[in-house]
Image (cartoon, rainbow, N blue to C red):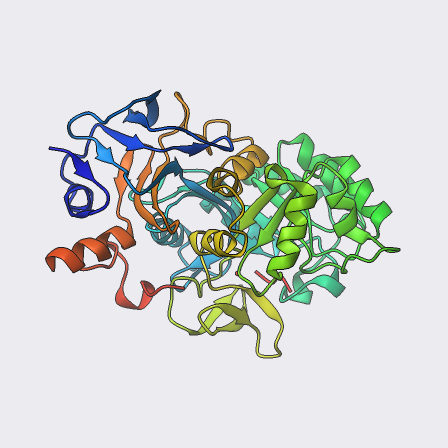
Length: 431
């Protein structure tokens, strides 16, 4: 019996109820900047075992007739979701599990849990808790993104000024001894900043410039010392000026990867178009900068030790300072799809798959290729995620459950383990 995604009931039944799934998927594939002709892939032992052109599916395959098969989405900046804040969580392990499951329900198959500027004891505790690991039924954690504390007080966004400090080799040594972060965002002009970039990059940590008032020369020095990315470009840094290019100009004129928050609030869509024309999609990584407010009802939530308020799209402190995002990465992806319809689907998907994977040195992620991790999503024509696999295991997709429930009335549309208050649709201190 052929299983087809549209209408979705048959395949959703097998995934949502944990029945034996199909041995393969068939349809057009988006990967490596290209859209393949109809192809067939097989997921086996956590890896992609087969990827080959095929004129027709085999019996039992998931058939994607009106959409695409693509790599799972990767978000390198997630402060929390579903009411959970990674920085302040009293049980970090449970926090990671809960957010990982929320993300997977939206097609995000791996992510970097992000913590904002904090005392060293908090950072050390979170580094161990947010190490790279699998999450049952959820997205894979790829290690912590430490945003701060070595940032510019004048471009701190909502980071607590009391937690900011100069970069210290001794503190970084303690970080590395506990559990090396995957990414660190810092300001290169801060005292000790360039030495910190060298120390971290030599340890294999990705260093990203951000929350910085650096001039172009200072930013170029940071790139020369080993920084390879910029955190939420344009936000929490001086604007681009034709005589004072600053961090924005220095980064765009380099080979560094730039993180962009595509929520329509942090950056105007025209500016995203300009960035893509300048840097190309192989250097642009869409990020959510999602806060605890993402995937939670509008209202108050926390970021570290501060209270922020969400209207369901943007999150601000009571003084109006922009704090982050209430959208998740799949929604940011669809935003760019709507703003820039001229972008080919395969080009667009690279910004949430191959580009962030390359930034992190995750060679087996972000691509559909034999031997790569079986992190796979199925997208409909509107770029909504209908099916998700993490390391070859089917994961509950909320959209799939909603569709199945509307057809059969049998299933509660909430992902398992998520309370009603956590599941409604929807990032820190970006400014």
